[in-house]
Amino acid sequence: AGGMESMTNAPYLLKEARNGMRLGHHSTYDHMFLDGLQDAYEGHLMGVYAQQIADRLKFSREKMNEWATMSAKRALEAQERGLFDDEIAPIDIRTKTATTHLDYDEHPRSIDLEKIPQLKPAFDKKGSVTAANSSAISDGAAALILMDEETARHQNLAPLAIIKSHATHARKPDEFTLAPVYAIEQLLSQLDWSIDEIDLWEINEAFAVVTQIAVAELG
Image 1 (tube, rainbow, N blue to C red):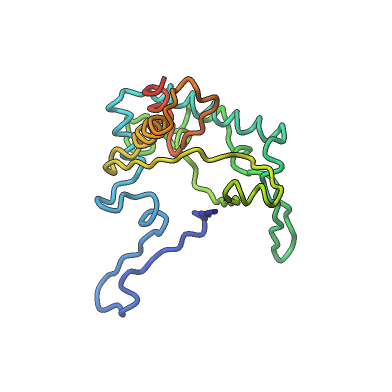
Image 2 (cartoon, rainbow, N blue to C red):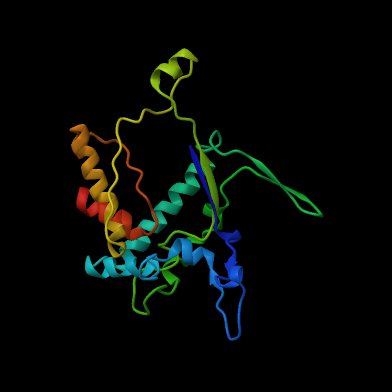
């Protein structure tokens, strides 16, 4: 199982080009927005909805910046301690003049922690959601091998993790930031587990408001 996203390679689209453009002006669309960052129904940016929920739940900019800073520090520390060395597949990037060997996640090292409080609101002039407490424009890929327990045992493979159950939950586009909480509650119910039985949480950080909601709701 795997997936990839390359936001820096997202093309611009000419919707009318396939059937031939006629007289008059025509529009160019950013594929990264059209098929990624925008709500497919209303065309609003995800960040706009994140800001609306932050306002509704009264999450301050300071609180979300604190979370963003903590998350960035954790990522940097993990890399410095080599915690992901066995999980990152190194690649060589060749150009006409040189070859660059890449064996680490570039993004955490590019964050200037001192500038996090200084960035302007991204989606509302008086808002609390900024580029610093939102996910970045970046590229990435991940893959893993899934198999049933019998197959792993037959091949003498020790699993890194066991999937006990799974759950999905969808909300209206303007409430997408709330979905993880409902999915978590559904999953805990399926397993008959309590929140206290979970040692470690990994919750989507599209925006700091997403994790802030989960922390507030789940305790």
